[in-house]
Length: 341
Ligand code: KG4
Ligand code: ZN
Image (cartoon, rainbow, N blue to C red):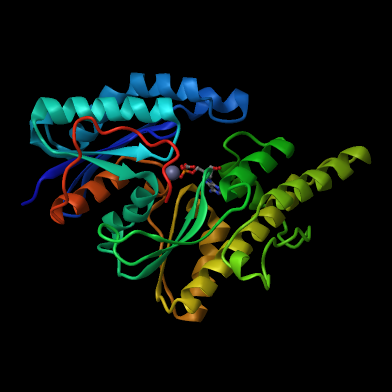
């Protein structure tokens, strides 16, 4: 049996701790400061950092309890070093270093997005390589070609030119008068709506510009949704929120899945992994399933609890690093808030 790897995640508003050994998830716990940010309509960095301070020890203990393990069973520590909010990252890193130092076990720095990619291995086993990864969250919307998660740099095929897909959901939800975080609220509202009610644009699809084939843009969609609700307001009518939500969700899901499947075809890749908070979206999942099935592509989506930020996904990368014999980080490891991909 290999080492038990403790993974720590604190890049945004979730404090996560997870325990993984030999590719298997032993237990994990997550605390979120989401509710404390709700009235500001977005994550407030100082509030997030303070919440991590409060949650760090209880979350690590809860993960250990769930795994039926004690602190002394931890054989390595992996921690998110970036990208993310610097104060928030700093709290997780300090805690991770403390544990690694106290137990005299190796420490590993992990890129947050590599964590999202690895989350799926905990449910579905090793990633077939190469594979295409669509990362869709509140901070990122990217198409990545992964040839070897631990040894090779991830090839970045396209990114968002402006807002991330989750950010678009969050901002439009606000305009629609739905609660924060907007993604789940739009998903719920959309259940009773008609996705063909509003013809929202499909930004950057069918573009002839090679540079933008796998790039995304969601700020125009946000503006279109704002204009659409403004029109109703100006005419003194109620906003048909369910129809707006369903139509917006359709536009986002259509663009994301169309580009992801095109990228698989172009790069001759037969596995698509969809990760990040927006992978929880029911229409994104449904369309991805349909389109992958017709294109002969295997679709992998981690379970909902592993799609959003968590410590298990960071432990999953740490476990891969340990097993590949990677060099541990020195104890002066620092955060990299704007880490490139
Ligand atoms: O991965 P994540 O937890 O955090 C990062 O951004 O790294 O993703 C959070 C994002 C938020 O924008 C949230 O609105 C969105 O994921 N989200 C969803 C759903 N659940 C979460 N978006 C659409 N539909 C959902 N069901
Ligand atoms: Zn994330």
